[in-house]
Length: 275
Image 1 (cartoon, rainbow, N blue to C red):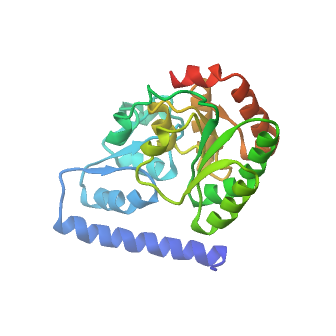
Image 2 (image 1 turned 30 degrees about the vertical axis):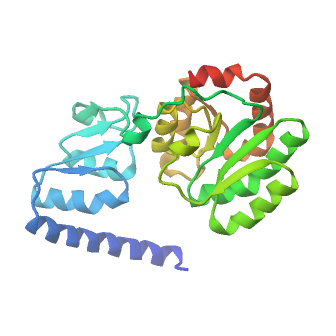
Image 3 (image 1 turned 60 degrees about the vertical axis):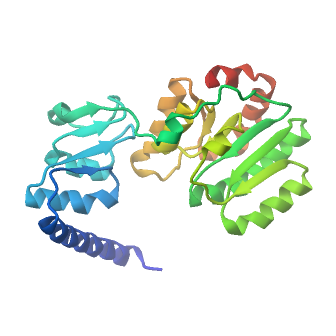
């Protein structure tokens, strides 16, 4: 594994190489405008566009502007945002803001959960997250679910996990007699949305917007190392809007049991969010 100084140097070389390739591409394939979706992947092409004087706009769906978009904003024609509550934009660039809401996939927009009953004997929980979240949730959540089951809370768990975690989780849930279904990857989350009462997820803006649009109540667990703590700010926004519950990762073991126990005994709290 590369040490930090070499990793930084390698990253700089990779970015410069990507900008060089982007300049060549845009020279021979000159578009009328470029749409940058934020993140480091959009930086080389947008920076190259600045060099070649090609117009571009950028999009920010978090509640604090990302570092890439912050660097690109002075050169962008506009910044499209999910909410005008976005933090981190200097006043002189405020006229570039255009609120458009969240960009959501068509199947999520058209999804309807109106006919699903809250708590059909069991509280059905969907566990979502990328590779880091899947690893962390698989290490932490099953023991909490076991305590809930022992305490009389009936559960059905739908859990995204990494392939190497399948055997461990299957054995654990079978041993503790907790109903479960595991999946390693899914392009169509709506098939799980239609089955559950509650989700536990990281706090990326896209998944929170999708769950909200689908009327799925969720417990948001922000990634502690997210840049500029943007996941925590995303989670706070949805909590203030009464769309979700917030538990920081360091508090999972102490708070998640009591929250799910409370929701199982007072399911009107989930019903009000879902409707």
